[in-house]
Length: 259
Length: 319
Image 1 (cartoon, rainbow over the protein chains, first blue to last red):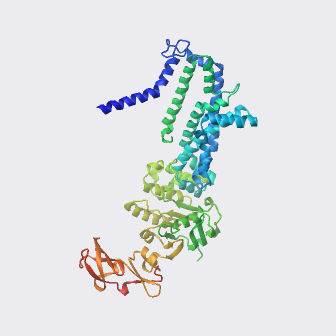
Image 2 (cartoon, helix red, strand yellow):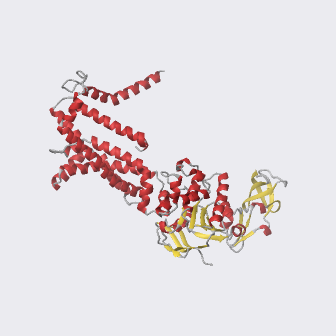
């Protein structure tokens, strides 16, 4: 009985810490007052409407979406062949390449961002926008390679050999047999990459400039000047978007099998 | 008569480790050949080389008069039934069988696929997905997938090893029937001598990357050339003779209860029509089968035994 009580207690605490902040943000966003506060002062949906009226949020949402979608696509275009090569061929130094590819998730984002700005953007005179795009692609690449490698490992090599004997070229076997069977892994990598990119703060912080900001950076900037519940409303909306994506992915492809 | 498939001076290697050395083999049209041997003898490697999945270090492979040594697997007109079946799990049974035909843009696709499925008795399964099938059914789909391509040679990798005993018998007769109906040249790889004996027209017994003995099942079973071949064919007692050769006895040829040798019974087991004894003696471990109705011996008993010269099979080489 006692152990049962403590089990429920631990479960309750865990859920409070996991879901609590989220509930507080939703409550704060529903406030009718003008300050970000909890408990909310009255109830209203006006801050949710306000979010869509703030020009800079619309622009930075576009930037974040573009980075998340196309950065992930480019990372997959690079990552899928890399994963294929590393699982199928005895590439010399494959372990080293894996380590290099993983380095953006091992090295703290602040350092990656600073290093990119100081030794890449400034000396080479590269624009902020392409640098931001490259940085996001590099950050997503490890997820693309790792998740796709995992599903490639589960795919037997002799299936490709069978396709070769039935008349496929090597590329044809990859397209007709390998790709359809790692579809789920690729989709999982896409979702992980998308969410990682969309929520990225430290690297983006260094690679922002006038007219080009990702949404999280823009939200920080907004909060420094305006302390109203619109940021809470936006956060709630973003959280719902992430939940919807993950839920749809779980529903249709069983995301949890891949990550 | 010229060979339909010929392997000439074939040397195969994985990196620096040589798996098959200087192999020469001719296979006639319509023949059913077994590549037999223990694991690591090079039988699977040889099969992969015929399929084109491994390019030879040196030597030549030709099929139906055409040199295919440097030809891609897709252009050799060779079928391969993998040990794991290697079906495509994202496609239905029908689409698996249709896979190669579609690539060739063949006409009457549906009729050909259904005919292929009929050959292996799976017409009712056309719409099923691969993971829903049993192992035996998957193997038959794999067989149909290769057969519809009408390959010049059909290769089978351990075709019976993943099946249970009852299915194994069924598949054995299935393979014989298919071979009889289609007249296709088949090469199958196995480590099980009873499979090779039951199915093959000729057996290629391999050892450490070379052919140890090549012959009909009767030849190899009755007159093995070496201790290795004899051991593989169920001769349990193999002794050297004076000039490098040897003599081999099957357990049934050993006589217990009389004779010049002495041994101690270490194991005794009942096997239906006979009892199987294991003796230790000065000549080494002796296995002897005694028909039911003769004297029985307890474990630990000292027994006289004889290795009759006229019941022995002479071997050209002891090892």
